[in-house]
Amino acid sequence: MGNPIVDPLVEGLDTDATSRLVQLQATVEGVAIVTINRPERRNAFDAELIAALSETFETLHGAEHVRVVFLRGAGGTFSAGADLDWMRAAADHTESDNHEDAMSMARMLKNLWDIPALTVALVQGGAFGGGAGLAAACDMAVATAETRFAFTEVKLGIIPATISPYVVGAIGARAARALFATGQVFDAAHAEKIGLVSEVVADDAGLDQAMARIAQEMMACGPQAVIESKRLVDKVAYERIDHGLMEETARAIARIRVSEEGQEGVRAFLERRKPRWAE
Image (tube, rainbow, N blue to C red; front, side, top):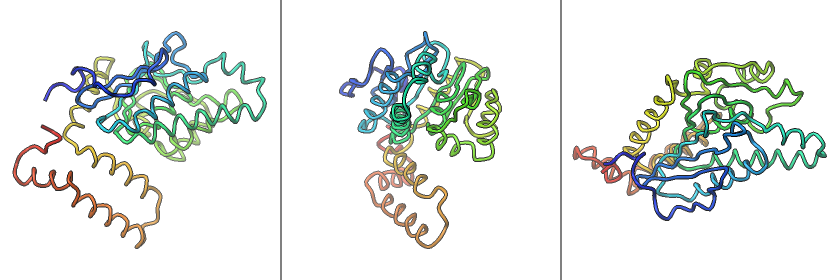
């Protein structure tokens, strides 16, 4: 198998979502890379960027050949959060206008969350406000040691509302209360400690190495099993363990065991060979 990062781009992936603000690439092996491309504004959000990201993430819902999606920012910063000019304009908006802006952000985050493939944020420089929320909405996040994070909305007299379901899910209620209420800046080591980040690497080269390693690891995983694993977590998270949940999880594994992919995976293991998806 070739390197899934450097192999040629996939033909046939819908790239209509690719714009000057968001770049989408995918390799033949099924590795997609989404790059926030607004480096002159430190990849800060405005209405246009949010719409471009939302469209890009939605495009990936139907990309069955994609096995893993990496999200990164151009120019050395993951995302500085909300764009100052956008915030300045929003200050004069009505409550209804602000509601629609917030719903656009919420829909974009949900489109990221609903991507079937594994999603990995590659974080460098800074991830503030909604930028940190993007990292939380991914399945995993890898950050460079010098990266700084913060939920600074409270210092502006507002709250990190649309990102809160993903942040609280990633770091828990107590850590979220402390960081939301203080707006304090914290480093990558603390982000890893509380669960916002899965792994910390030394520098940008380490980030690229982590991306290549994770991509290679995902090639060994059954594509449908990855999708079903993510669905399983959504079904059982915060549910009371009762007979109904036990039945639901038993039905889920029974269905997967008799599927074509499940049968191939078990047979390959017993026959001491690679499954077809890993060849």
